[in-house]
Image 1 (spheres, rainbow, N blue to C red):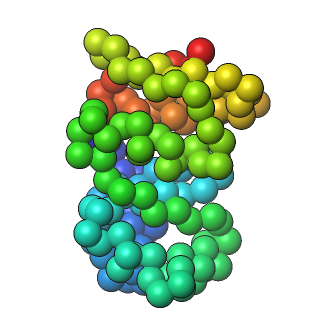
Image 2: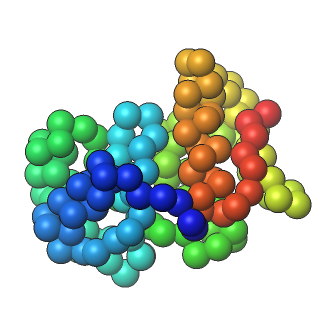
Length: 137
């Protein structure tokens, strides 16, 4: 959880708080989308009525915006990863010593991405949030 916030992420977080009315410290990029993590009880407030807040912020930034539930430990890692990689699905999820392994099956290429871009982004996210390594098999 000790990730460093750069100036661009700080701007995103300030805009998020201004539009959504929810304060958060967690923001990251994955697959050209900007993700914000909020506690479960503030998720509906952040999304807004019929997704109004997300559409407004997406139009301001000209990017896809997604709001996911903040993981409360390694137990919620599977739901957190499924929310991030959605609509891509994976077959199996396994937590080993200090490593998270998912079996991609036919969607393995979509999880890895061209030049391993998505894999590297996900490895950074998992390292920041769970302190574990990440692999796709």
